[in-house]
Image 1: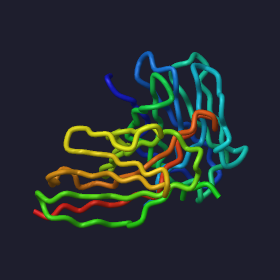
Image 2: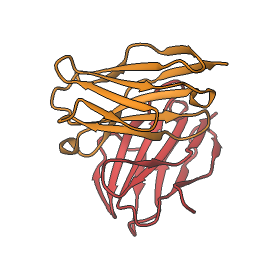
Image 3: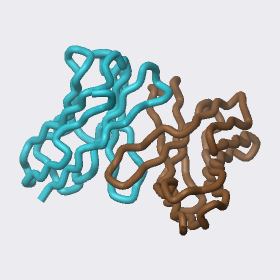
Length: 112
Length: 113
């Protein structure tokens, strides 16, 4: 497709369950970003990849959060042992550089 | 601390009027700023950007103004339309800071027909 695609769009997880969120960036985009957006807040940076290299993971809130982009294209954000405070929309963005980024529609995660 | 924030959480304007959304930043080293528009259920959409070596940049119906003296950024939307109703975020990107983009909390724009 022409844009950034994220799946699933919605995910309901029981507390303690592991989840995996997928991001398909725009083809050819070198940079890939993950953000977490709580209700009524602006997106918060989680991590950044340049190709397959994870150059910045300073925003990951705990060691339960893990992101990978093994072939420099599709990326997966994994959250282990989910907790209620993990409930948020997780946004993925890609760009040719680190400037204008194109965002996907996000995955809304609800932990019950 | 470092922050990018907005003065008003909600702005209501009449269709056809001009809208001005304001934003303050605290890091004088910030060198690149972006305005995003986010509609309900969608990801943020790039509107316009500006570098710190500029004080004004114009797009289609939008203008961004940067005042580095008071660390203030504004987005002006001319002839506001119902389709402009959304949440608007200013954001700051500092490549030297690890390429992360820092978003403010957002201003919700309501356009009255």
